[in-house]
Amino acid sequence: MSVEEQIKKYIASQPEPKISDIQALHNIILKLIPSCKLWFLDGKNNEKTRKGKREWLLH
Image 1: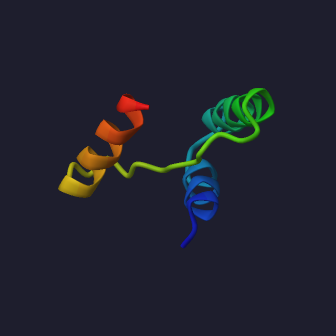
Image 2: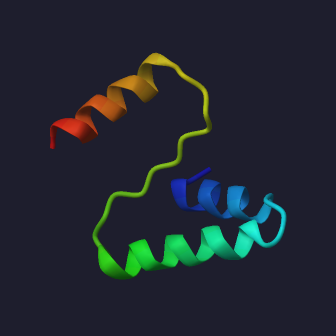
Image 3: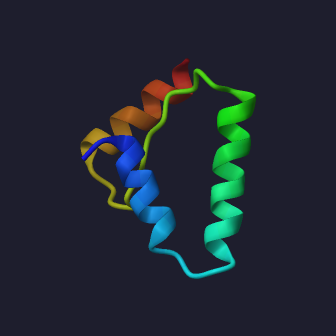
């Protein structure tokens, strides 16, 4: 599943009005920074996730 699909699935799984709020925030971010790298963290803390966070913070 792609990152975009994971994001859409997560947003759709939330109750209203949270869906609207998260979707609005997501749209604002994409509008402000259209070339941003999308990523989705599922809340699990594994080595790959920690490595990704470190790489992002270093850039």
